[in-house]
Length: 106
Image 1 (spheres, rainbow, N blue to C red):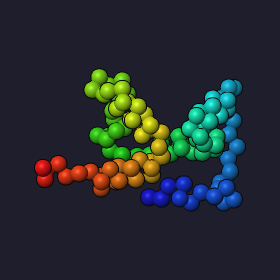
Image 2: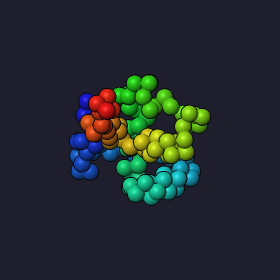
Image 3: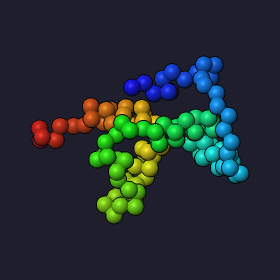
Image 4: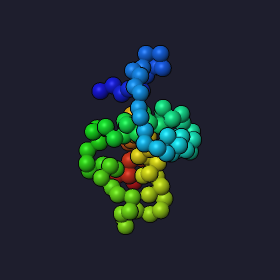
């Protein structure tokens, strides 16, 4: 499945006028600044995350940030992982799996 990011170009992209509730534009702008993204990229990223069905329920999507099983660092890592696009998440998981040392050999 190809993601919108692979085919995205500002010249060829579908354009859609969106009406936001009062104050939401400012909230989106602030979050986008925090993530060093444009507002458009932030909105696309969040839409991709909410529309994504690629990860099985047993993966990181089913772990809650308030779980007692997670340390502070694990919560932070999970939060940052969830801010990635689905494509970025898949690439990171593949890279980790590829680079993971074989503990069975020890």
